[in-house]
Amino acid sequence: MREYLLTLCITAAVTYLLTGPVRKFAIVAGAMPEIRARDVHREPTPRLGGIAMFFGLCAGLLVADHLTNLNEVFANSNEPRALLSGAALIWLIGVLDDKFEIDALIKLGGQMIAAGVMVVQGLTILWLPIPGVGLVALTQWQGTLLTVALVVITINAVNFVDGLDGLAAGVVCIASAAFFLYAYRIWYSYGIEAAAPATLFAAILMGMCLGFLPHNMHPARIFMGDSGSMLIGLVLAAGAISITGQIDPDVMNLFSGSERNTVHQTVPVFIPLLLPLTIIAIPAADLVLAIVRRTWRGQSPFAADRGHLHHRLLEVGHSHSRAVLIMYFWSALISFGALAYSVNSGAMWSVLAIAALSAVGLVLLLLPRFTPRAPRWAEHLLPPRYRRRRAAAAAAGDGSPVTHETAVTDGPDEAREHRAAAVAGVSGVNGATAIGARSRLLDRREAESSR
Image 1: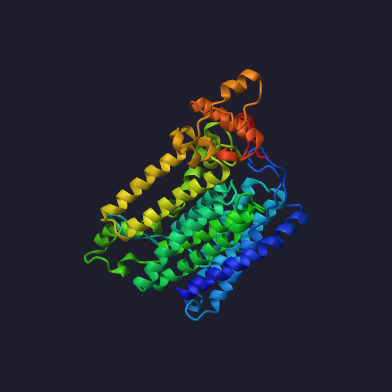
Image 2: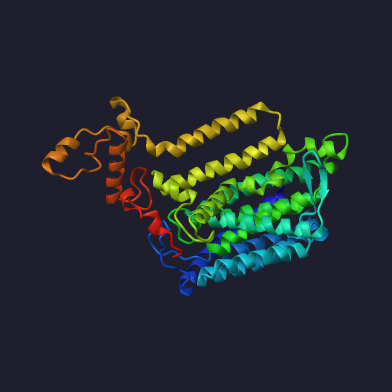
């Protein structure tokens, strides 16, 4: 564990220290595109943050190669080299896209080539545990197609969710933390060395995200761009492929009996392994909804719009920071819920805890729709947005503007008007949306542009 933590810290430190110089380089290189209709930031912000993240990945792999125990990962497996090769290719494509905005189909082809490079070097799915059937060995073509599909889906899921400051890095960091705990448990508790590469990939991925987050939290000083979002998506997919298709579940000896019964009874244990899309369920759901929405309208699945989940959270009335935290909450609930279920699927407390936290999450999602009224004796203990207002009628009578101190929140409509008025004066006050008053939002049909 000490060596994994050291690798994580070195990766985070290198990423953090390089992000500042990379930001200056991006400004000089002109990697600051104009604000597009679907963007939520108001000032041009440099991209190319993926450069720092890639060098953090290289530093983490280099340090791990020189550590006593982790060196065995490089000696016994070619997967770290396969990951580095695929990551370098997808990173170059991302850098070109951040600077020149290459065509979406070209990016898709590059993603498939990067996945193919990893497959050629041995990072591929060899078999799958199927409930009720047993361990199913895949042919070379089946394993290749499944691996490429998983890599492409994960990359685009992470890329689609990268729409708010700190969102993609935080969600992937949470997912990789849950994945690290599971992979480390298999490697350490069961003594399965085949799980060591996936554990290393998860530790490095956490370091990349943690090192970049301080520069990317709202208001962001730099964006990771496609060079970063596609990179972390590929690393997450590589870890899932490594531990899913390389480990024989019968080696764990959790149950006695035939191989079919073993696999059938250990399905809960393999939930985090078989479903990297469950670990990043929020980005995956956003990806599926975006494809369905655009196809239904007769558009290309790669056409940009403002219909993503984070855009809808802003439209509901959440602030930028609150929308990001809500996405963090749901990602942590799904990923760590799956992890808890895999450890002990028969524990009723885990199911009840997940259900209770889901209810809390639903309340948080709908919070801006409600304006609770506090007793007058407790008003001084609450933020101004929850206090009663008495002077709206007088303000409307004498023609004076309705300010933050004179607004009345007597109902949902008045509450929304009050929030819009507050944002018109000061952006982001009292939980207002980060992109201005609701009435100033662009019409979604007009905003569906790739620029």
